[in-house]
Amino acid sequence: MQVINKYFTQLTAAQAQQFETLLRLYPEWNAKVNVISRRDIDNLEVNHILHSLAIARFVQFAPGTQVLDLGTGGGFPAIPLAVMFPATHFHLVDRIGKKLRVAQDVSTQAGLDNVTVQHGDIREVKGAFDFVVSRAVMPLPDMVPLVRRLIAKPQRNAVPNGLICLKGGNLDDELRPYAKQVVIEDISTYFNEPFFATKRIIHLPIII
Image (cartoon, rainbow, N blue to C red; front, side, top):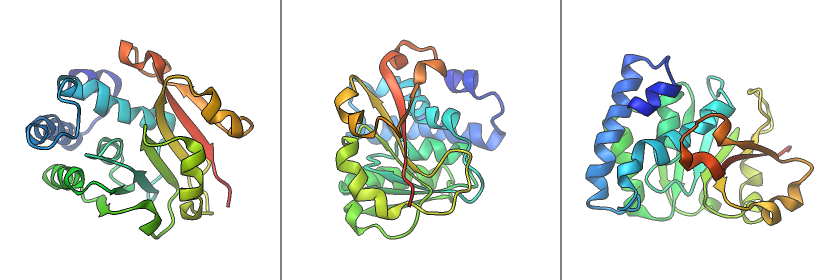
């Protein structure tokens, strides 16, 4: 919790307890289901939880916001964000059932009543969402056609509805088709740990 507390100083006691629960449960689950690289589980707080919370620095979700986490795996970035935004609903989708079981158990034990999970393909998802979030799932040109129909038209946040992705590396080719619309934020402007030197938030508004 030391690193999380450094950047998020206004956590309630309940939120602090929920983050402690995440830090306890993920290593326990990871010994049984490989949701995080076993070489990386010791870096859970920075590389996975804090990385997910970069989105909380980019946008403060308004109460009632609906967020879809595409390819959530064990619950990143949605579960840390669900702790941070208890008045926002997060719907987690993944095709790998055993990873979703981890996400379901962690969210249940952490007392997150703003999380739902769906095992299956994104094409099976119904509903309307203010944002679709993802962490290194697929290139934007592949993702946009899959999620466009799911983006809600009414705007309730300061940031336009659309995709918010956590990505790293060279993104020039991937982002070129969206050069006039995409917003790129270096996560190193939020967090100073070396891990974030090449990490970015990609926001692509999708206007319906």
